[in-house]
Image (cartoon, rainbow, N blue to C red):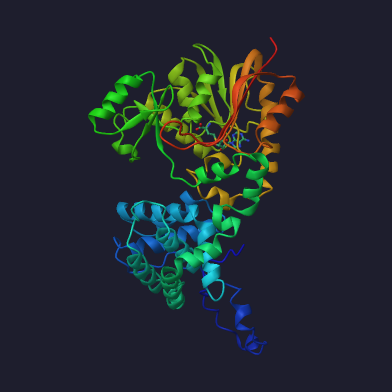
Length: 472
Ligand SMILES: C[S@@+](CC[C@H](N)C(=O)[O-])C[C@H]1O[C@@H](n2cnc3c(N)ncnc32)[C@H](O)[C@@H]1O
């Protein structure tokens, strides 16, 4: 993949007389030497214009194409220049849409552009095309506004200005020949499904009956699902609170409420007071499955940001250790515990090792192991473009080691819940089966693979659950 984000060059240092005689490099060659990304260039565009949001979103999309995850890429864009909250929201919306339609947009550009555009130009076109082909009933912007603002954005940045004419030509041609171009592009599976080919092949192999639904659900916008804090309120009370606030909502699980219209956390009634947390309905199955009772010693071995840790503590007065290899992410567990007024010991450590363990066995262990996250692409549409095929095996090897290590720490008769947010059996069912054989672990009843499901009634991400018990 091309790691350059710009065509611009740093000015070469002044040549010394001796060097002046050296043979001249061809321009194309010299350009490879010192590309200087102009990421902090101030465009002078109005901060509340669509053009400003488009160029910001394009920077983030281009960063994803070089391996940065989208939240981090957006944070970098926002950090570089003063971005109003409204523009942040617009950039985020455009960039997330662009991720969900990247296969289609890149195929359209390949059909229309005379040669492969530079990364930022390509990303800008992908952002514009995502808006022009938005699946919404009411498109977010008028098509001619999108073209006009994309050309304005291209003109305002040195890395795209030279391509302004091409950007204009491509987008206008798309408006004129939309149907024929889409028909031609959508012959390619990557354009039709908006996932890399290896991902489409993996979904077909794993779920021959369901792969189309699985891929399509992954391209929808996620719901906002809340978890009721059983220590502070009840389902009935909280539904009444939402009703009084004029917010339509549906109960979709014992503790799960899906808001009809997603809002920022600041607008969720009682969020600051810990009445509810944001958590997918599928993820809310973990704490009840673990069957924790008061006084038990519990290890949440891959805990950050702490959604499941907090749910466990909302259901029982347990002695919980929340462990995570990433000390920075563990800080977020602390923040969530504080908001909910709950307590757990925070342990920055590697769940593959026992060096941190005091030797006292745990009654319950939650192993929500690192995985490809292929089941949560609704929320993280960049994941499909960031992952590589080989990641599945690499992560399955790591999680196998984590599971074997944790099993040594489980008390006789204790239970270990293995969770992934993956759709790939190599990381989930095959891993669970191999683990049971290696450790002679008894397998208890658990949901197994939950494929992602959208819709008002049963809306959840793709997760895998396997529950094991140690012989007493
Ligand atoms: C799927 S997330 C956990 C989500 C969390 N259980 C929740 O519900 O909020 C996986 C976590 O595993 C952590 N992790 C990755 N490798 C690890 C390791 N070797 N030991 C411990 N934690 C690890 C990551 O930092 C990440 O926070």
